[in-house]
Length: 248
Length: 158
Image 1 (tube, rainbow over the protein chains, first blue to last red):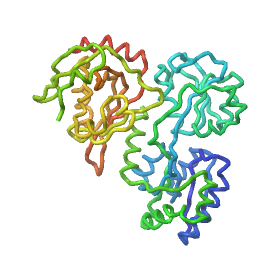
Image 2 (cartoon, rainbow over the protein chains, first blue to last red):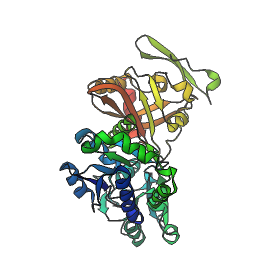
Image 3 (cartoon, chains in turn yellow, cyan):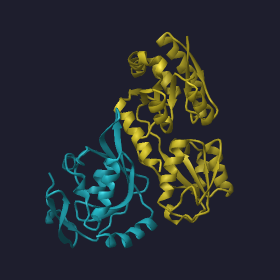
Image 4 (cartoon, one colour):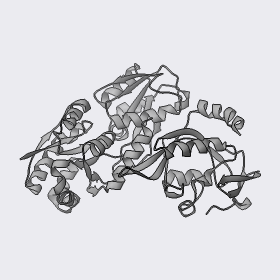
């Protein structure tokens, strides 16, 4: 029997090969056939989840509630010291210095990352801005969000903080951060589905010990991580509650 | 157990009032007109048990309230109750979450130093195995327009 592993489509392109290497490692360690399927977008990944095709997922926190409460998934691990944070940025020449000074009707550039967009919208809310009084344009990558800010056809960009920090210095010099979130408790998680749930403890132990040898460390590095740490069920439930509280 | 506020903790000129928190519990509160602006990008998060007793606070909660973590854990959440907040708002909060539903509102919170800060609060019941076991409160920066509306509205609700 072969299992299906998938990664939240908001993964950093630089880490694509890392996920394939990780999947090979996971297959060897667990002695199981696991196919890695990288979906291009959230709708196609969610369709696969709804169709019960997915057995392992490195999931966006936005999807965690659906995975746990509707599909019987449980958390395995999260990347050590990594949390999802958002940045609201403008063109450096934009005179606005505070979100409170932004006006209704502005063009906001976002990606499809659901948790980042949600965090960004929460920060814009402080300026009386909401989905009903702004124009949202969705782009494939954060580099494109930055480009549209530079071209001037977007007034505000919502970025994953890590992606913003990875932009070239030349681009960053032409942008300015209005707000950077400091939420700390929203993170992606590697989760396990019903068909593999009996092997949860075994797979969790393999992952937690992954950074204990050089080979495992190298693979983690290729994903941009230092180590995996266990996610307790209650920690996941807390994050789901938090996401629900923030969703409106 | 909740203690009366102490003059030595207060920064600036203050007023004093006796606040009826719940049941037969009253608290002497000392409050000033000094506002602490809500920090950009942060969330204040806390969890209480079913009786409103604090069981968890995050770092932002500690920073904004002015209390230590030790002072907050096991204290009633009403340690933040500001005398300008109409009791009807908190009755609505409890009525809503006791039904298992989410409550949202703009709240003026009282700091240990007598100052205040405005938040947009969301309180949700934490449901485990079909039962409400606790409540999580998440506070974010409110829009100034909503705050101005509440500054006008709340005095009319007493």
